[in-house]
Image 1 (cartoon, rainbow, N blue to C red):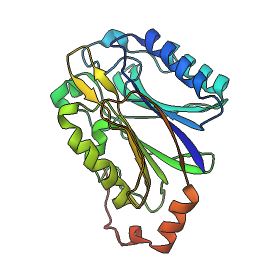
Image 2: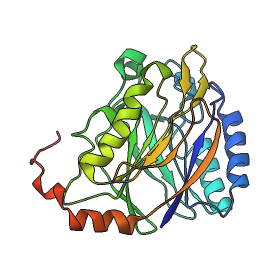
Image 3: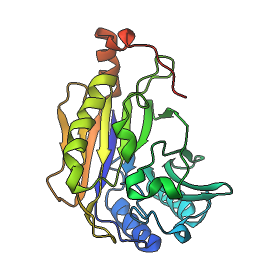
Length: 258
């Protein structure tokens, strides 16, 4: 069993230090209660797509603070943040685990309508991370709309899909539909964490963070516009048993992702 803390809160617009202070207090409040904390997309800034000055190098101040918190509170932390590399910016998803090297992937599908594609470069990593006996795949917001990108690879299967997002209220019905859809088609547990509140552009977010099992039961579901932390316990053993007893994934069409 693995315990996840889903953190659904407003993000202070364009203020990494304020968001890090808030995260520190929220993790301190759940010390010893969860194995992994899941934050929204761009947790330290909000969905800022026109502020290159907010980007940090990988291993910079925010990364150092995330590692410090992971070590201090003995909890892994997942989310995404703006990273600056020599060839441009990335919306980088991460897993900071206690006393371990961080792992990361860069967002594959960049939201052109929101200006993201003009500022960031897309990633191509389809990695699965092992953590405490579970195999975890991370998706970032808009990636959720692309089922081929998230399709199970029989050679490198995952148990849990985690999606971190800044998904606006005006389109939240698609978020609500696609989280359980990804669970069904991949025979996997699915967690989605979104933000709430209004960002610096006036965009409104109402959350709807959730966790689903492979039977599409709502293991956790936040109320509309709810702020808070919910802890859910997920059984990797049960999902693996389910896939073994009903190996639907074996009948999937072959494909290649370029």
